[in-house]
Image 1 (spheres, helix red, strand yellow):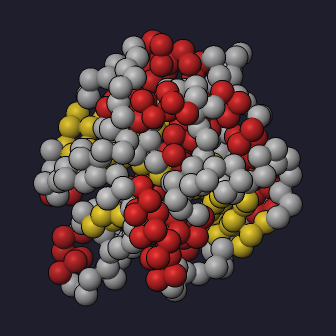
Image 2 (image 1 turned 30 degrees about the horizontal axis):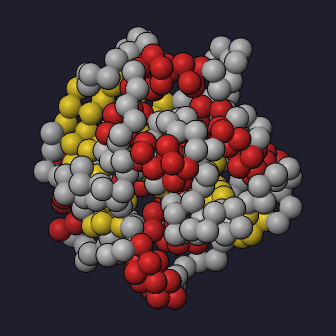
Length: 335
């Protein structure tokens, strides 16, 4: 299917796609916003000071509401007590709503789109009483590439990040190189990649965020070699290497999900990587009504019996009730 047909199909599906979606709160004046991004928020009804915050960035041809429905971050927020902020790219910045992660202006601290997103975080801290030690960022596709950008530019702000089909920070410096990078044609050494992050915030001497990576092995939009670039970049920051310290071949007894763990020099896990067999450019979901189900059957999702958003939230330390008996749970409820 060519790009025009894909766009038309997605536009046709949008009205159905959003049925039943709980409205997000739009915040119009959240502070310094040089790129004119829009801010949407979901806070649980039981919101109280001291809650964590997750920033979730959509992919191309998406908006904040569609991303929220696809990923089910709001469901997890309600169940576990945290706030979710959704930055939204306006069409005036990009004709298909991609975050412009590949431009040099958007790879600098307190400039461009990163500045706008940082302002959203500052607003959430001030208005929702967010615990500043529990702020996380995640994204899909172009939003995933912007996720590594935010982690690199603001290691003093974000504790961890989750990257769904994205790329390493500063893997490209213009639109053309961005396309080459996403296809896996730009490969760099670990020191080169690590130094890009170190140079993003000169003088910073604190800890860097940990990273969880999710990528389909059959992804032809963002080649899975990009997952390897992220692993090299962030393990280098932690004094480790890109050889997995441990591997789970059938995660949660799911033959399509393989988990790799990478430790830093301190012996702690710095990066985890979920490699998903048989999945293309999509977010792995597990739709249903069971306690551990989540995600919707919508564009850019794939039912892999794996609620990947849940495992991102678990990596962040946000899950208050663990789902360790998923198989038995599914037998006792209707999917």
